Length: 177
Image (tube, rainbow, N blue to C red; front, side, top):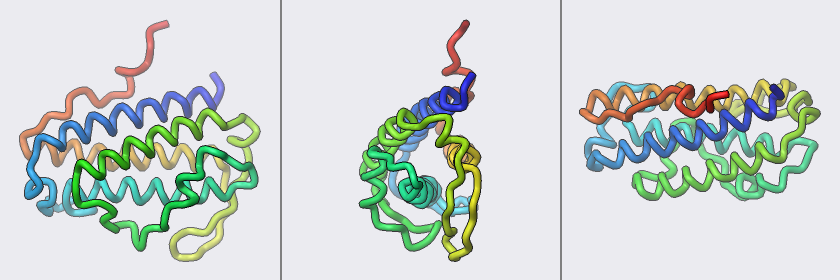
């Protein structure tokens, strides 16, 4: 199996789980969504925003790759968040709409990848200005892992608030041979 196929599967899983998380979160009121629950980014809304902030940081970096990705125009035009804990949207509906847009763009971006690009190096600076040169595919894998990590936190916070997200395993989306 090629790495591109693996990234297509990760992007599809990412989109599916984000929809499930947002649908589950929609069962709570604004006060419950904004309550500091002791997570890294405080509340459910704070953590959902952090995932989006991370995506903006990373996809803006990917947009600067020497290979031009048409699908990343959206991210090129996005303002860089002020911090990893920035609240981009405090309203769940607006945040969910933005998430849907981003997930569609991520799927388009993955369709533009080639094995050569996946194996290439991305030169970038982190939020502290430090410069790095790392394997593009490994960085993309990190982005999907980052989302999964924080969605796991959100699913726990939702469960503690009485909301069951349902099946979260990527296994559910892997077709039978």
